[in-house]
Every structure is written in structure tokens, then in C-alpha cells.
Length: 453
Image 1 (tube, helix red, strand yellow):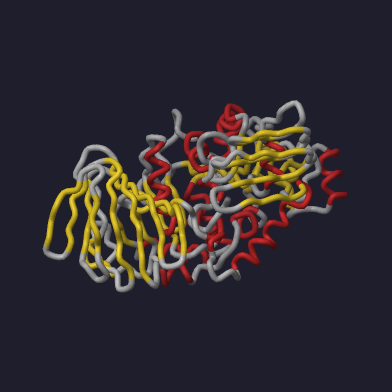
Image 2 (image 1 turned 30 degrees about the vertical axis):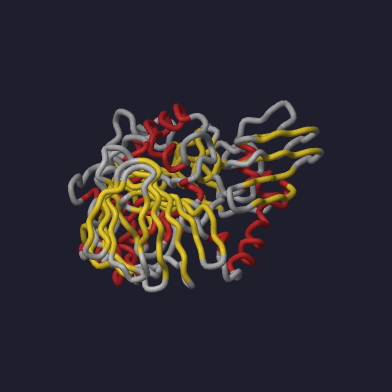
């Protein structure tokens, strides 16, 4: 389900909304400023659309040209904050976590505030419900003065053995490292300058040389590529003398595998988590998920069965993480179908691939009111457009005309063309492509409202 064009944080794995949307809503109440989003530049329109769906206007969406782990992302966010609010507190959150008790999360953030305002770098430590070997741990030390519920972080431990994890849980002084941090932005930058100055220097240069792009801010690529890659835990929290932890039992899960999704899900009387149109008979302890089709499962125990529109996974629950090995094999597949998203978001709307075949491809296209595709042509394919709903203005070489519902047109190979939604509701159309090459790189843009020429 998690693809490069639509990774897991943008999927509704924990409920009706995506994990990203749940994370944003969790910090959208009183006391919180508008969010700053740091994301892959390839996900910018998906981020914008999911924010629009929940009615949130971000303070900024900052685009990373390459991934450089959490220390760099935190640094860029801190630089954006100190530019306008030098003393502001900064809450750093991953977008792919599940928190089933958000009130306890908010209470922990309030407790952490007292220590953060005294220049501590505070991490939320989740009370473990078992000896999990896939998480890092934090050992709490002495209490922080004048900050009830806050303790100095005495040690950070990365993914211990099962024996050590069992001892940590039994001892009561160790907590899962949720990688949720609260600190004053200047305090973090000071510690970064002390412990990882190369990260700060590269991020400062990438930020200062960055540029606005529509509703986004692009970091300078050359400068950001020079930034060392590392986590905030390793580069800062494990080295600083100002680390603190606030223990909290908030029913937290890092959505890192199907097993953790099953563990955090709502189970029926047989211990099954069922999502979508699922029918079962004599099935126990399984995670069953269907995006569209009716999924019928009979006589299985402790399994993971996931059916999407273009792929199916069947695996014993205990071995579900081995899906990575299947993904490695699929990556070598020339078609690359497993790594393409069924629905792709663009600044003007989205398109959805319905069918691929020899020398043809069928797409369902949705265009937002007032939005327009680029003026473009294709070297190797022709297109047929059929309007399903809405009104479309079409440019085709020297012609301009309007298409209504149930009308269609043909775009020959190399014909210059453009499509605009001139109605007040979303425009829906079916596009049938034909030719000897149908890749997305067979688009020559001549003019574009979104700076993609």
C-alpha cells in the first residue's frame, strides 16, 4: 500500500483520515500555531490536498530536494521559526504515528512545556506495554526542578535485544522513544551548533538560498545535498546535557509494519482487525484490509491479507515484515507497477490509472474548478477525452472550444493542447491514450501556471 508516490503517512491506516491528517488535527487546537510541514518535493501536491481536505492552512510547506533524516528536517523548521519568532517553542512530530489517546498526548506536551521553556530538549517517552525490540528506549533520571512530570534523560538505547527489552519493561525506568520533541527553536540550534555544526551550516545555507514556489518553499538543492544525514536522536539528543523526558501512556504506535497496525486496531471477537469490504468464516487473529474489492477469507489464523486495486499481499502475521523482500523483487520488474500509485495528485487535481494494456492506457482525470493543465504536446501518443461531468475549455493547436458532459474530442500526436475547468464544480473526464510509448516523461510543456516548464 505504501508507494514512493503515496507513502504510508498519507494512507488511512488508523481510521478514516490519513496518518498525516490525524497528526495535523492532533495539534490544531488552542495553543498551537499553524503547522510547518517539511516534506519530499514529490509529495507537495498530495500534502496540499490532504491539508485542504481537513481545512488547515499551514504556516509553510518546505520542500526537501533529497532526504537527509530528522536532524536536517528539524533544523530547517527551527530556522523558519526563529526568522519570525525567535523565542517560540517548537513541537517536532513524525507524520506516521498513531495516538489513540490524544488527550494524554496533549497533557504530556503541557507538562513538557515547563522544561522546554528552561532550555531543555524534551522527548516524550511512551510507557511500554511489552518488550518491543523495534523501538529505541529512554531511561529517566532525576526530576527536573520546577517542571512536574519531567525528568532528565539518563540514557538513550537503540533497539535492544529481547532479553534487555524485557528487563527494561520490568524495571519501570525505561520508556519507548517516540521521537516527539518539544524545545525552544534557539535551544535546539545551539545544541546542534555544538554537536553537529556541519548539519547546521548546510541547512542554514540551503534555507537562505531557498526560493518560494507557489504555496511552497524550496530549499536550495546543492546546499542541502551537502548536509550530513542523521537522526536528531543520534546527532543531538544522545550528546546533549540538556535532554529531558516526559513519560506518557497515550496508546502510541509507530506504524512501521502490518503487525503494529494490527496491534493498534479495533479487533472483533475473534481478534481480527477488518478494514473495508471484508467477509470472514472461521478466521482468527488476522489483519484483513480491502480497498475496493470484496475480500473473502476462510479458515485462516494469524494472517495478514491486504487487497488493493492493483496488488494483493498474503502472509503469516509473524512474517509480514518480509514484504520488503517481495518489494525488492518487484523493484527489478521492468513494469514497476508496484511502485506507481493508482491515484497521482497534481496542482490542478489528480489522475487515476484505470487500465493499462499493449499500446493503450485509460485514466480518470479530475480537474479543480478554475484549474488548467499545462499547454503541452506528446511526441509518441494520441489522446481521446470524454467529459463525464462538468465543463471543459479545450485548446487544440489553433482551435478553442468548450466541451459539455457526454461530449468528447481527439488530440493527435504532436498537437499542442490544453484543458481548463471553466465550471464551478470539479471536472471529471476519461482519457484514453494510444501509441507506442505512454510514459509520463512524454510530455513537452510549453506554458504552465505552476512553474513546471
